[in-house]
Amino acid sequence: MYAIIRTGGKQFRAEPGKNIRIPSLDIEAGEVVTFDDVLLGADGDTIKVGLPGVSGAAVTAEVVRHGKGEKIIIFKHKRRKNYRRKQGHRQKFTEVRINEINLG
Image 1 (tube, rainbow, N blue to C red):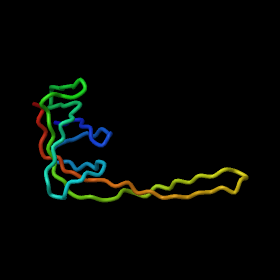
Image 2 (image 1 turned 120 degrees about the vertical axis):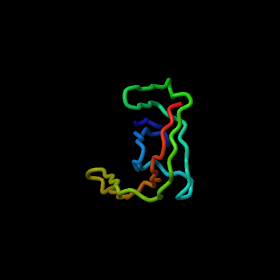
Image 3 (image 1 turned 45 degrees about the horizontal axis):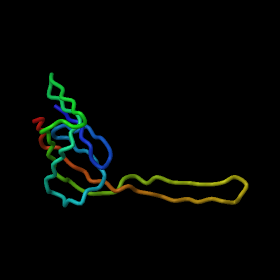
Image 4 (image 1 turned 45 degrees about the vertical axis):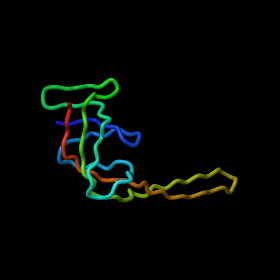
């Protein structure tokens, strides 16, 4: 059983018992969050596809932790102009454990 959910402008595949990293949420660790924007749901042999979302479907998850991802380097330069700029970035994320998928 799995579902495709949308949160933070991105899409994620959610399966019960799996941990996924999503863009940062303002929810404390240990709390339960519900994702109502389910785009697709499958439970074995049946697949429900939404237009754009599956009505009545929801995915519940528990917030495990917050953190920062791996560092990426942004390097800009213009040749022969002595222009160089180096900048680093670490994207914040929230790790959630999928508890239940309800397809309605």
